[in-house]
Length: 95
Image (cartoon, rainbow, N blue to C red):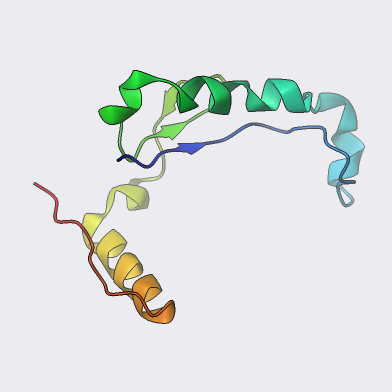
């Protein structure tokens, strides 16, 4: 099992964006275009090796902020979330 994130970009939907974002309506892409990377990656075999990767709107891996690679912080967040949701903490150990 792997976990990845995809950023679809500034997508045009039926939801009306609040001001000041509504001023940029012409820059938004269609929902179909926004979903392309998610749909393509959903069936990609590469996700078996790309666990924890963040993908941009074109489906390419994107380097995120340095703090997002802090495994000690990730473990604390995982365990705190597990406690708050009444699940047994079981943050996977990193090799």
